[in-house]
Image (tube, one colour):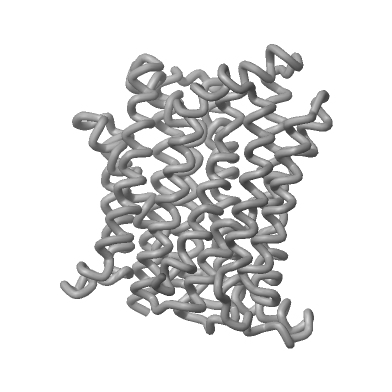
Length: 396
């Protein structure tokens, strides 16, 4: 088997597993509510437990990846995720479910960053950008599986049996990743103080702060929209029904998956035409801002615009490979997790801030439609500023 397949396939299975677990609670929510009396607030707590554990370990995760390597770190963490799935399958109280969900979030926290680390060690920039996109496509397939197919499985087997099966799957995926080839981590012999100094150097570097604002506001903003605010926007601003709004979400997901696949299989070809990863990132972000402007103004048919946002999200992930190319491979884990943390902070800051802005505007007397439009317009202004910063720094 070719080297890239030996490295790619196990890590792709890990990210598929991660994305499936990220979305599974949305499908089993009715069962949790009915069987355990879990309220909407309780479901929010379960989600927060996963996300807080996931986000809290990103910077320590970067140190671990650079010290011990992607293969060891991710396989060990996936065993924790498998234990979390087993505990969730047996959980009989909100506390047990929350602890289990936190273990799952901790356990899958390395699935994307470990793959980026492994690809950065083995492959050059063009192949790395291609494989990064292919990994994201694997996550998109996990999200699709954790929808209608999962809804068919729940009545047949029950949610507890599904989580028991996920526990077994987690062990199998961990074993597959542990069996992959691995180069020396590059920072194994370095003392912890030196590793932390390397992380501090990344966070203080000009290259990092060229990419970080754009990723935080544009990619984080997309995640905030996809995860919460797209449907309320479409219903309050565009007057769409819930079913039509859900169709727009499907288009976003389809655009995202198509974009990842296009980058995975086409980035090398378009690079030969003079459209390298940096030009794709610059142009993609610009087109995404244009699509966002048309959405905010309510101009034109909405379906192609929301499809375009999905494509923009896929292009935005080129930033990981481009940023990493500014540093040595021994820093790959710390570089990727630092940028991932910024995206994570942006997603949740925007998700909270957008709602706070809408509430404040409505309290000030604005109608719901205008409140949503002003809030979205403010987000667009911040995103435009981050893109212009990226362009200006390139010229400097």
